[in-house]
Structure formats: structure tokens, C-alpha cells
Length: 429
Ligand code: HEC
Ligand code: HEC
Ligand code: HEC
Image (cartoon, rainbow, N blue to C red):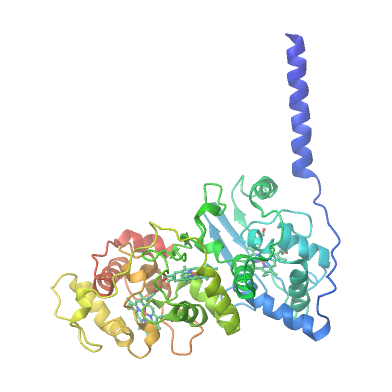
């Protein structure tokens, strides 16, 4: 009896020591060196600038109305809010004093300068696939920015999520084992596209569903997920619920400009990715991303609704004139007529700009209207010079926004919208 007790106690002590070692042992810092292929001087800075754009560091590290790269943008999680940090070269509030090794460790392993574990809101599960040369090039470019001193807001995470060491176990389970390696069976364009999509542009961070542990489900890659309340739809080649019926030219147009003829436009996080990153990339890169996307395994997704490109509601409408519609939803129709029709027109082709065309858009075919509600509340500002959409959060009540959302879904998607005022209320918060 006493022997069993001694053995059990012994085992508990050993387990406790091992756990303590695992969680509290200081994170290692490995020295890093660029390969002989790394460019130098101005060529290095230019490569770093390109990579910083392709990796979209700016949109997350800039607060609304704040200085670029100076951080402070809030990320609301179910258990609190965390803020992005200042990555300008300011010596005290930015990363001016960081060594190259510390910078590479942050992007490859999600570890901060003091050895603390970083939250995966910094998408290091994707950046771990970047080559060390490329991370060093990004570092070199960031070092040329003008230093900005900032007051960093304090994170408000609740226990146990404010215990950063918990992330160590998470990372052990979900980090990729090694940087991305080109596939010799594929051509150069495919390999370029794969590296852009998987490592730099981190499309999966928004478009891949997550498991209960908040890690990307590899078996459902790109099948669609919810981000900040927006649905980031299925981008696999499934013909009904994905982009299998989009031509290469349409996919490329959407990624480069935020709009594809016959498929509507981008809003939410996608509009931002296009504004800060994809819309600034060379055409070759966009073509490579498109080529790669066409080769990922198709997935059917319940999140992405099938599209009705020719609803009967649009058959008799002209740009300036609504169709003869049944009198249902007079509130929605009245708001659309006064606040929306001048840009969007009645026949779905978009008036002042083709960018405002709604026929064929996934968002208006989604009876739950997740993206329609949020677009109306927050507006859309894409890089496109042809005009943005204003925010209507302050202009209308929850009931009115639900009514106009259901009108838009019914009219342009040809389906009965199911948006309730409570959904609008929830989206406001
Ligand atoms: C999707 C949003 C997002 C993107 C994209 C992003 N970051 Fe971050 N980053 C964050 C957040 C949020 C934090 C704070 C994490 C924390 O507190 O644990 C962070 C932290 C960091 C840190 C640690 C800074 C410190 O003071 O501890 C560095 C370095 C960093 N990011 C660099 C980059 C670079 C370089 C890029 C582009 C290659 C990038 N980030 C892209 C959201 C992002
Ligand atoms: C920050 C989150 C985010 C990132 C990163 C992101 N997307 Fe999206 N994406 C979205 C959201 C949200 C939508 C829905 C936009 C809408 O309804 O207007 C979307 C829509 C799309 C669509 C249109 C789908 C349809 O059926 O209408 C395509 C194509 C797309 N994304 C491709 C990509 C690719 C390729 C990448 C990486 C290069 C990427 N996205 C990165 C959030 C993101
Ligand atoms: C000043 C012009 C303008 C007004 C007014 C306007 N919109 Fe828009 N709207 C746009 C543009 C431009 C886009 C496309 C944004 C882009 O380039 O991706 C858009 C996009 C949309 C989308 C598509 C979002 C997506 O994710 O696919 C919906 C839905 C929408 N608007 C609904 C409305 C409703 C409802 C109203 C009235 C309450 C309205 N809009 C008023 C210009 C406008």
C-alpha cells in the first residue's frame, strides 16, 4: 500500500517537474543567417517591401485612422480583446531594438521578444511556412519605416486565456513542422501561387473552418468560415458552393480589384485584404494564386449558398426601374429606393459603377444575410477609385436594416431573406 503511494507520489512529482519545464523554460533563441541567394542593399529592401505587402502586415498593424504599422488595432475574441503591436522601428514602443533572430522567432514560432508566447491572431501558423530569407527581407524593409512612438492599449483577456504559456501546448499540436517546400511535380507558376496562398497571403486563416481548439481543419481547407461575423465563403473549385464556375479571368479580377463581373464585390476582411495587399500585387502573382486555387480539392460547404444568377425578380427590372413586384416588404423596398438604388440600380448590374452590381453575388444569395447586414452597417472601402459604399449603422434602426437586407436578398438573390432585427443588433456589437 505504502509502496503504491510512494510510486504514485513520485510519478506526480515527475509529471509536475516535466510540465513546469515545458511551460516555464525560457524559449530558445536560434541565431539566423540569410542564404547566399539573398539580395543585398536596395534590392533587399525592395524584396522586403513586396513581401510585407503580400503578407498583409499593414492592415492588422494599423488602427483605424492610425499611423501605418504603428499597431493598436483591436481584435475582439469571444474571451476578450487583444491589440496588434507597433512594428515600426521605434526603439521603445516598436521593434527598433529587436535582433534579427528575435524577429524570425516571432514570425516562425509565435514568440515575443521577452520569450512570451504570442496569440495566433498574428497568423504565425501560416508565416511559419515562410523562408528565413523572406522573413529577414521583411525585417529589413520594416527597419526603413519612419519610427512612430505609440501608447499600446492593454489587452483585456479573461483567465485562463491571459496565461500565454497555455499557447505552448497549442503550438505543439498545430504549428507546421517545417517551412514550405516547392513541389517538383508542379510548374513554377503553381509553386509561386501555393507559397503566396499558404504562407504569405494566409487565405486559410479566414477561409478554412476551425476546430474546437481554434485550429484550422486541414481536411476542410478553404471550405469557408466565419470571420468577424462575415462569412468568408468556400473558395475551393466546388461548382455550386465554391468558385468552380468562375473563369480564371473572373477570379483574378476579384482578387486584384475586389470585383468580378457576374459575382459581385468584396466586403469585410476580403475588401481589406484587397485594399492593402492583393490589389497591390503584380498581375503575375494574381495569376499564380488563381492557378493554385483551381487545384485545391473541391469541398461542398454548408456555409456557402448556391447562386441563382437569374432570379425572376430581376427579369423585368431595368437599371432605373424596379420590376413589378408583389407588395411584400414595403419598408425594405422604400429604404432601398431612397438610400441604395442610386448606386446599385434595380436590375442588379450596378449603376454609377459596375462595382456595385449585385446580381450573382454570394452575399445576396445567403438567406441569413451575414455579409449583407454587415456591409450595410459598416460600408465598404475598397481601393477601387470608382467609389465606396457608405456605412448606414447610424442612419437606420435594427428593424429597418433587417427589412432592407431582406429586400436585397429577395430582389437580387430571388430567395426569401431570413434576417431578423436581433441579427442586426448582434452585428452592431
Ligand atoms: C491577422 C492580423 C495580423 C497580421 C496579418 C499580422 N499581424 Fe503581427 N500581430 C498581430 C497581433 C494581434 C499581434 C499581438 C499578438 C500578441 O499580443 O500575442 C501581433 C504581434 C506581432 C509581433 C510581436 C510584436 C511584439 O511587440 O511582441 C510582430 C513582430 C509582428 N506581429 C509582426 C508582423 C509582421 C512582420 C507581419 C506581416 C508579415 C504581421 N505581423 C502580420 C496581428 C497580425
Ligand atoms: C481577413 C480575412 C480574409 C482573408 C485573409 C482572405 N479572405 Fe477571401 N473572403 C473573406 C470574406 C469575409 C469574404 C466574403 C466577402 C463578401 O461577401 O463580399 C471573402 C470572399 C472571397 C472570394 C469570393 C467568394 C464568393 O463566392 O463570392 C474569393 C474568391 C476569395 N475570398 C479568395 C481569397 C483568397 C485567394 C485569399 C488569399 C489570397 C483570401 N480570399 C484571403 C475574407 C478573407
Ligand atoms: C454611394 C454608393 C452606394 C450606396 C449609396 C450603397 N451602396 Fe452598396 N455598394 C456600393 C459599392 C461600390 C459596392 C461594392 C463594393 C466593392 O467594390 O466591393 C457595394 C456593395 C454592396 C453589397 C455587396 C456586399 C458583398 O459582400 O457582396 C450589398 C449587399 C450592398 N452594397 C447593399 C447596399 C444597401 C442595402 C444599400 C442601401 C442601404 C447600399 N448598398 C447603398 C455602393 C453603394
